Each structure stands twice: as C-alpha cells, then as structure tokens.
Length: 96
Image (cartoon, rainbow, N blue to C red):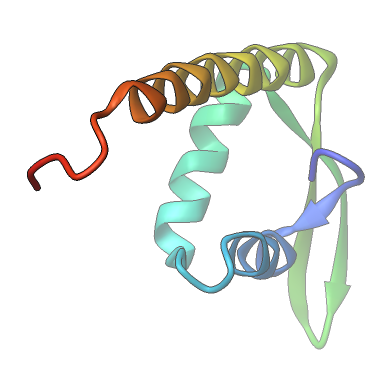
C-alpha cells in the first residue's frame, strides 16, 4: 500500500510475504486497523470495484500517512542502532 493502492487481500498477502510468513493477519484485524488509519487520515479509499459479485476496496497511503510511516521507519532504525550497539558491547561468552 505504501507503493500503490492495495485491496485488503493484497495487503494481507504483502504482510505475509514481507515477514517471510511469520506474520499472518486475520481479516478482522486488518480491517480494524484500516478503519483506524482511515480515521487518522493516514489512508484513504482509492477506489472500489466489484469482483465476482463482491466489493473490493483499494486503500492508498496519504501524504500524512507517508510522513507518519517515514517517522516510524526512522524510530525503528534508531532502535536497531541501539540494539546493535548493545550487542557489540556484550562480553564474548557472556551468560544467557
């Protein structure tokens, strides 16, 4: 969704692929999150279409959402740097 609009099932598949299969969102969890992101104006419905008699809604990241995502990415990078520093400072052969 960050790169282009995605429908719910596409988002579920992306999350599973990106996580190497470690994360499998349930549809209810995803749509609850999308509702929250939409109410925060971080995503919007880009378009809707009917496929096999079912409504398919495509979501798009807004500029505000992209800015928030960039902030979150930087926060995660900072956390990663701290973790790397702590690992380097760990004594070799330390206890578990």
